[in-house]
Image 1 (tube, rainbow, N blue to C red):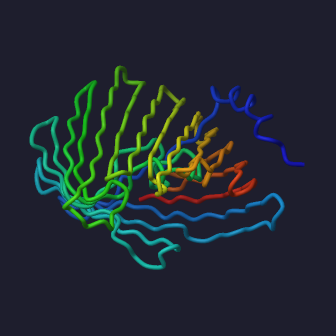
Image 2 (image 1 turned 90 degrees about the horizontal axis):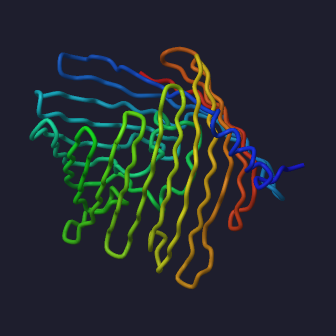
Image 3 (image 1 turned 90 degrees about the vertical axis):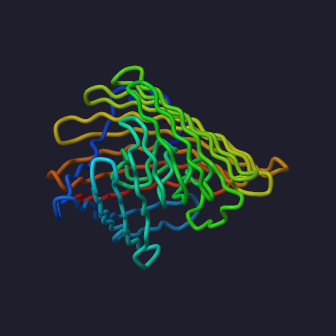
Length: 315
């Protein structure tokens, strides 16, 4: 019998102070005095039991990525990321950009690069569990083409990116550019708060998150809202709560998220909420195993339970 997430929510809150998962780390290969290569191989098995439907399973290579980082000198650096995904069936250029440090605190970046926004990262090496929430396309920026300036201080940081579009790396229209703005504060070594505003014409998104990390414990909360990210006058909001605890070579993560997108008439066109429980185990410095059990509820996509096993190799 399926257990409702509503009955599990009180359990989720109680566990939130004692849950966690470690992140994979990689030092990369020094190809020359100035050139370094890093990357990862991401493989998984996923089984999904759909309420009122057939179960589905899939396995294989999710993604392979190799990143080249070149240091010309103390100020000028460049990075090129290449990736292969089964979904693409080909090698794709993910990022290619240069950075120049005008001062110790202020850096300019130009080229094709990933948005600063969002608590959950685009790459599996930055996630605390196997799956993302699934709401990133509505609230987060994506890979972008343009110019970005970043000021990084001890307590306060700010960034402004002027790009063709904050939501699409394929957009080449620079006549009507979009932008992304970030403000961040780190009042202590343990606390970080960031806020982002993104706009491209009528399409707007706001994302803010706060995280507490001390010792083996990480807690995070995120809130999002958007307008027209699904087109036709749509609007929506969403949030997540996450707790992560790491001990020795193992860890566990607990996450709850919820979102809803409405069209101009107020009809729900996409929604979802889920509780995710994700233990992990560090087999070696370069191999992380991630296990996940996720319970989804959605009025538009239906309910489902998912089990996933991931092997993440970093180098």
